[in-house]
Amino acid sequence: MSGTLAALLAYMVLQLGIGVWVSRRIADESDYLIAGRQLGYPLAIFSTFATWFGAETMIGSAGTTYREGLSIASAEPFGYGLCLILMGLVFAVPLWRRRLTTLADLFRERYSVGVERLAAVILIPSSILWAAAQVRAFGTVLSTAAPTLNVESAIAVAAGFTILYTAFGGLLADATTDLIQGILLIIGLSVVGIAVVTALGGLEAVPAALEAARQARALAAPAVAPPWLEVAEAWAIPVCGSVIATELVGRVIATRTPAVARNSSLAAGALYVSVGMIPVFIGLVGATLLPGLADAEALLPTIAQRLLPTVGFAVFAGGIISAILSTVDSTLLVSSGLMSHNLVVPLLGITDEARKVRVARLGVLAFGAAAYLLALRAEGVFALVEQASAFGSAGALVTVCFALFTSLGGPRTAAATLIAGTVSYLVANAAGASAPFLLSLASALGTYVGGVALGRIVGGAAEDGTAENGEAENVTA
Image 1 (cartoon, rainbow, N blue to C red):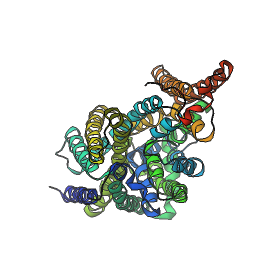
Image 2 (cartoon, one colour; image 1 turned 30 degrees about the horizontal axis):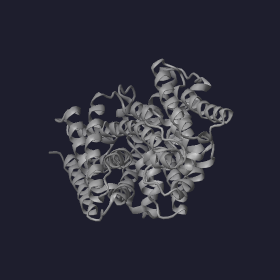
Image 3 (cartoon, one colour; image 1 turned 180 degrees about the vertical axis):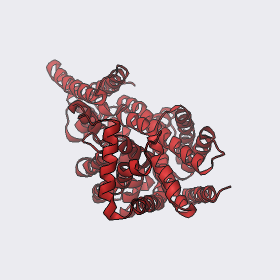
Image 4 (cartoon, rainbow, N blue to C red; image 1 turned 90 degrees about the vertical axis):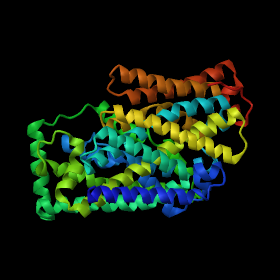
């Protein structure tokens, strides 16, 4: 066993041990899913940052920048960082004041139980896709550290560990380990960044390296300005498609006060952009150090392996695994929460808190297995994350905005909007449309506005927001 692999395994065991230790404090469903609403600034900031800073930020953005350079269409890390800032400025306080357990609770309180269940069913696949991307990246790191382990076997090991790790601790353990993982991933990326600058010949050599890499990309593929619609799509997916992501909402509603909810999102956004520039920089100068790399997503681990000593590479690999673990446990936890809290528990009439926690843990196992199967069949990390950000989020975003900030619309309008946003995205994506997410967003907005207008024309009280007080009819999902 190599020293790097031994260090990674020891780190994984440590994270699992922390999860088991923290799990002893879980008394009810609220403790398991939202940490008893007790997250303060350190845990909230680093948990949000570490959850958002996944494998696609480290591996995917470096590879994309290596291949295409930095352009107006490059939304990473700026788009996802802006998403966190938008959450802090607009959504964090209203969501916190609702005292939700999951995002789907908002649909029940504002519309109906049927809309709640429909929203849960639509929101779950996005988290599973995101989890699959992280599991695949985890397997790639393990196979790099242990060359005798093929990618498929490494993905199986990664999936088994992440499922076990997440099922034990819940959000409190997740947030506790996120603090450690966030610090380690910053250290890991910084170590590689310093090694790259040193290999280039110091800071004074960086401008020349950037220019040489730009010219190499221009010779390989002359720059062509992307159509404005593609640029808008590239930015809309991380900003609009992720601002009400269940993983992010889960952190906001788990904080101690509305001020913590708002300020931790803003701080996490600033930290995300700052740290996210390191892999972007490595991608920009990568052509100077590793010209002609066939697999662009292999740039970051390959550079780290070549430039760093064993100890340094172990720190870097620990940073990648930290980024992956902090994201995948969140995705599995929120999807399990939607399944257990919004579907299984109310349908079965479960009232015992211990049974609720068991159902949630079983959900982690089930969705972890689904993420593993998707990870085996995925072609790339970044593509999976884009699908996760876009799938079903257009209808959810439109409905959440109307639910939080207006009294317009009732359960029929909300249900139609959720369905329209999801179906239009699937159809547009399958048809090869250049901007499927923007089309789904327009479809969802048009459906909601049209539903409100139709409700007023026919005089339906339910479509004017009375569902918020529980008077509207139930819409079954």
